[in-house]
Image (cartoon, rainbow, N blue to C red; front, side):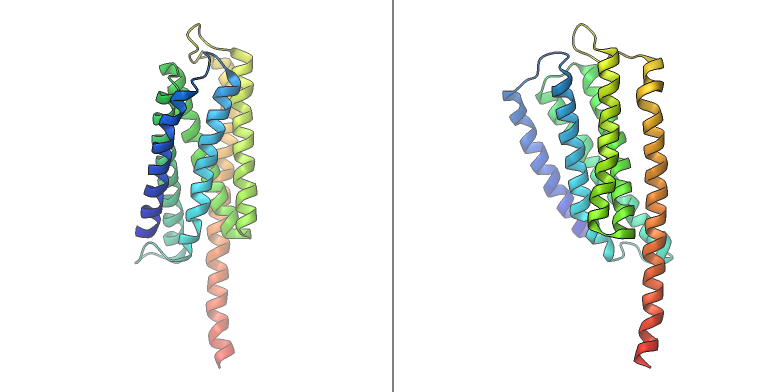
Amino acid sequence: MERAIGRSVRWLIAGLVGAPLLLAVPPPHGSTPWILFHLTVLVAYGLALTMALVDELDTPWFTGLSPKAGLFGSAVSLVVLATGAVALVTLASSAALRLDPSMQFLQLLSTLDIAWAAGATAIGARLAAGRIAGWVAGGAVVAVCVWSVAAYLNAVGYTPAGGWLVDGDAMWRYILPYDIAAAVIAITTLTLGVRTRTEASARQAMAQPSRQS
């Protein structure tokens, strides 16, 4: 865990240092391509951080727990680390881009929602089927969720100041169904990944004494 925290802090510092560079390229108000590019970069950063740290789960983070509980707790802790880094970089980069405050809030909500779901899905898939599966599963969640934000912005538009125009009906049509589905997929994939990994480890531990005898 200490190693994972140390690496996540280095990633966070890199993200915070890079965020002010966006001051040189402020987007026009109400620019959907800019908003989506910013959102995609942030959640891709979170997914990359998660996959950079996921190998740390091969060593137990917690002692005194059952293998499943320990691995699940470790995976959740990793999701929290990566999502927290994404949140801080989102705040810094949104301010650097001088987005309308309401749009900054939308970006923060969107990145938090996508980052945790994509991260949990990626970890679960990696535990169950390997690194490539983790990248593919996490990337799929990112793609669908970013698409849902794009569909909402294209349908609703912006306030005159380029801010978040809230439309409850559109949220239920374009955003929330995909958020709910992503959450269900994330929890299910992570649970199955933890189960698959711990059962495989248990079978391996039982097979070793048999070969030695």
